[in-house]
Length: 206
Image (cartoon, rainbow, N blue to C red; front, side):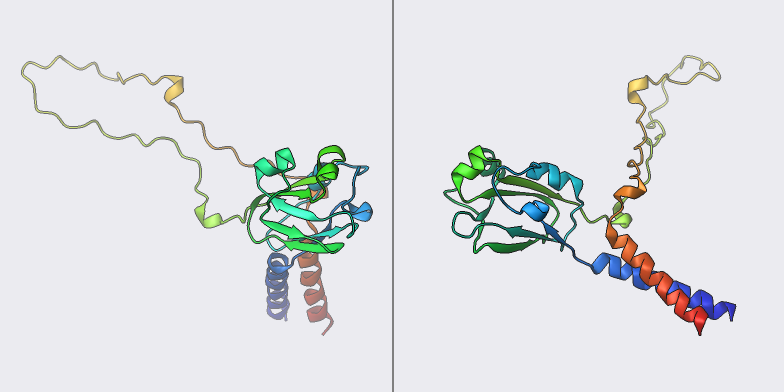
């Protein structure tokens, strides 16, 4: 009986972890105000409050007659250059899915709204962590001195003496990344935990 409960718990944990890695979320730019000029909260501040991952989507709601969304380069974003873009979203309601990690730059297709009304956005998508590529901190290995031919009448060695090492030659260990508080955890993990507990409850009930 105990073995079956443990097996059900393990299956639930695995399913929850799988769902957490596969789920994609929609983020509404500007929340209820949408993609609009003179936002009550700067769009970059809105982006900093959220946590974006690959496969997540941005949802833009805006005035189709007067506005659009352009995906541009960093330089075009800085100058509100609307003459060319990687992608143009229009129609009043648009979505954009993140296919990679890194920065994404968006501006309004209306140059006045971009330059004078703060309608521009930078989103940083988190990198997918590969634990197999993370190596533990290590210092420089101590290599044996190279061999050399025996010289006549060598100077006597003083026992216990070793070459001095300056502080600058000691490699500082890589510190672990700071841990985020529980209030910053993504809802990805909440869903996974819910599924795990649900599977466990079903197994105990039956």
